[in-house]
Length: 427
Image 1: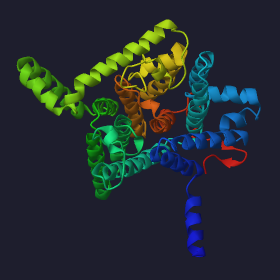
Image 2: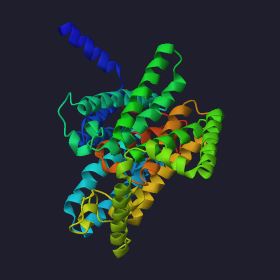
Image 3: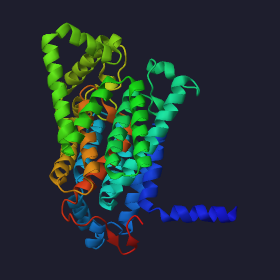
Image 4: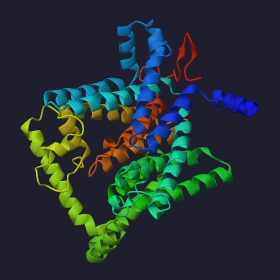
């Protein structure tokens, strides 16, 4: 038994520290919305500890001095500075409006994920995108399997609360749908780097399982986000044949819609999930947007703090929606125009660097998947707010940081890894 324990310990020690941290963070993020913050805090703690021990290259270059180290970190990271501005905007607005709990959430949820994502951005190698994608697919399969057991009643669940839609460990089917969309895009990226028939078979089966999971969520916004993400992925990979087929299908659909409108709309209605509740859901989302903009117009320069939308819904209105069901409107309401602009700058910097680095990149599939996930977020955000969920928030932060690494360093593009006085980062 002791020999077996030592063998297990030796195998674990062979895995670089950054990969071990990533596995634990993904496990906590996928388990539940209660455990996800612990993963976020772990990521931030490890990053802060490495900065303290001079194991982040910009701090080593700055000689360990605080101000030069911070300036170097801001130059090297695309996420850190706009992320801190976003956090400050959310906390300041909450403090002014006396939303103490919201101010605390900005500190304990948003700030750690900003610091943790920045840490990964500075420590990860470009090839670590493969490890993240592989682990994300495995965890998504486990989440889908757990959801299927809950769905069929093998395991007890509060399934009735989701109106017969699979939510698994994500509590909300729409949040699960966006997570599965990210996992499907990661699976598509992995298919470009496997050659053995057994590996291709595994990935094809994974795509089928994750696709079934997406179908069982019955999420309209998730389905649209996935389709948009696949389109961005194919465009980024310059898959001319697939793009031509997609454009041809869209053109043919528009022609059919023009010639046979009644039949075409009937088919679309049959294909669209939960068509019986479509009118009710559209009405609720319009009301939610109207409530958000009413409050924003009262003071468009300050946010109200995280998770405060519900307090601005008129009394007596049902259901008590948790958010405005629109990414940008919700960001403006809760973080103000400064926070919204910071979020757009944060994602925009990564996307712009990613598109500039696509040509000739040895990890183009993973870079394309990261760009596709960002595109999927904004499409999903037209009618929902997936980042409200700490689990989605954590996983998307990991993927965005990995996409930034894949795009190359802003200053020293050839520095894929930092070497400090205590040894090699992440090893």
